[in-house]
Length: 261
Image (cartoon, one colour):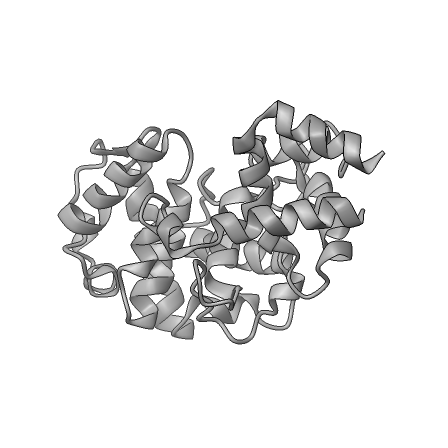
């Protein structure tokens, strides 16, 4: 366990650096200073954060610069998005109709609460995600969207890992002042959950940190619980580390395993 902690801490230090920001979707919330702009940019940038990274950054520039005129909060509250053609493609399967859904939900949230953070106060991060999902649906005639993942198990379908939303929470809540912005004061970084993408999950399984095969909520909770043993106050810092170990390749992973036996 100590050898694993040392390796993960080393990779964390390597990847948790300012240089990381420019080629990551977190660069979009970093480009704003107004709290409301940062929150909206964090939600939207994390929403399209799947697939090729260069494509994500290109799609983000289209969304924030070309469509929102580099003023996310003003754009959302103005209702200008209602004039968009629903068929405009923004990123892969994320179209203008999906973008308008989220803008409508955000206008509702900011009008009622003044900040997205309110939805996450006094509850678990999973309940906060469910609050966000409900507020979005309420603003859209009760319709839910696949782009806001469901943290609750449905009949025949496990609870989602909510990877992109946990990434947004990492951005907004971690307070080390390097990559993550940490602008929310009411949500403890100790309570955050690991953003579980396929690469992080694969690396964690190869290292023996988790055993479950599914990439769902239960696996997120299992992995985060193990990482919390290594860093009780900041378990999701190891998101950087697992990403870095995965980048290093299987030979590097084999070396870690051999040294921990």
